[in-house]
Length: 46
Image 1 (spheres, rainbow, N blue to C red):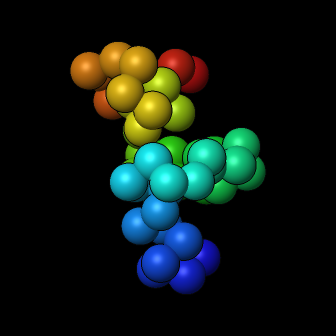
Image 2: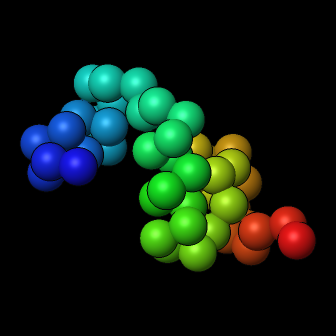
């Protein structure tokens, strides 16, 4: 993923595709809900 695309996701200029959210959650070892700001708890469900 190019840096400028990632930046647009962070700024809310583009919606993040599902596949990218899954990969980022794997990379950061957290839940997708945490990435999207739906919870303050980064733990993933087993």
